[in-house]
Amino acid sequence: MDLKEEDILGADIGRHWYYRSKAAALGRAVAGIGTRHLLDVGAGSGFFSRHLLAQTPAESALCVDTGYPCDRDDSVAGKPVLYRRDCGQTDCDLVLMMDVLEHVDDDRGLVRHYAGKVPAGAHFLVTVPAFQFLWSGHDVFLEHKRRYRLAEVEAALRDAGLAIVRGAYYFGLVFPLAAAVRLADRKTTEPRSSLKKQGALANGVLSAICAAELPLFPVNRLAGLSAFVLAKKP
Image 1 (tube, rainbow, N blue to C red):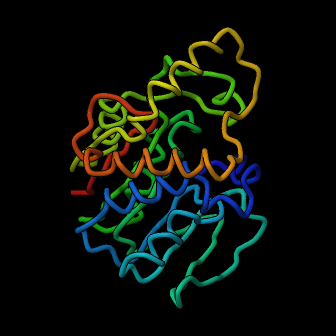
Image 2 (image 1 turned 60 degrees about the vertical axis):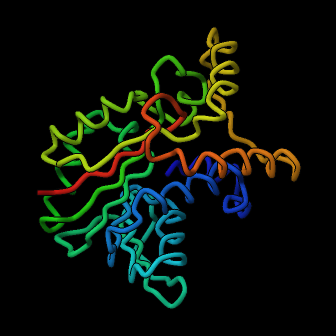
Image 3 (image 1 turned 90 degrees about the horizontal axis):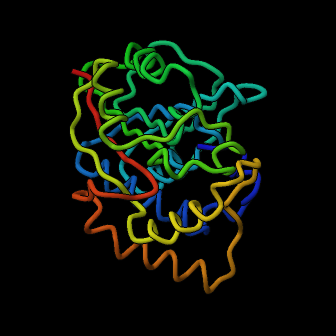
């Protein structure tokens, strides 16, 4: 996840409509695969893996991020969370890459690198920002290299040796509004985040809109702000 967004939202990140809704979509995306051990790549605070530990039977999380000043251990709901700058071979059976691939030059190489560290049968849940035409100062601020169509991120994962299980867009109901704002502001790419703390009313309304979308999420291959892909190492 993007550390710069964590810095903006601080302790309110778990209540913000965007991250709250994204965590709910993550839970829906990995439901039924029987995850025991998580490998969270580019994890930042470990928000998403901590959410899964608290809400599912998953037993542990290994959070990897080169931005950590040192290795440390923590826990959530009595389950271990290890924060590491790097990792070797692991028995983790679900690899999270939440908004990571858009930050690197070689997206396929990064997936291939971590696919080599987990056993056959391990799943990968990957999210990326959707649609290059939505490029804005927000992407520049977050140091993105690109945005993706769903078919493009699926192709990247296939090229890295994974088999696609399913893919979908999310944040489809707020997509028209967000697209209108981005397109109106496309003349400038001044680095600035479009994510901000919201008042209780706006946060509640946006959370409710995204919650209403969840039942349609698995079949939405039309449009959204984020692309979610579940893949598997053969």
